Image (tube, rainbow, N blue to C red; front, side, top):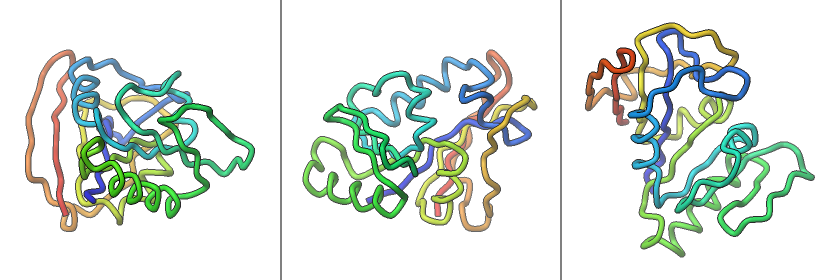
Length: 167
């Protein structure tokens, strides 16, 4: 199993404000859709709720401390922590490898990124070359442990780059 995080962050490490992205970059949304389609995704409850509904062709593992939280959908499973999320991911990939491939994506929020930073094999990070106001931040990481292996610069609608780091 390849465990990857996928995120977009501003120059000042902001990843969200009021449970929303503080920018609109269609190319980044397309990148996210293409990378995660057909895969298992792990996320926190607030990130899941920000989606409004489950994303098509993906399995959603939602981490929450709220023991009464429930969501009725065959492509959504609610768990109480990262160990349970990883265990479920392994089981799903073993049972449905042809459907979900071998890569599992951590898609946020800030606390889930922080909990998984030492566990991931790969990081897909869109870096927006501008500061934004926000209340959620992407965690610091050691660029000696996660090495930059690919970078593609873009300029529209604002300067940003797609970066891939690997352990």
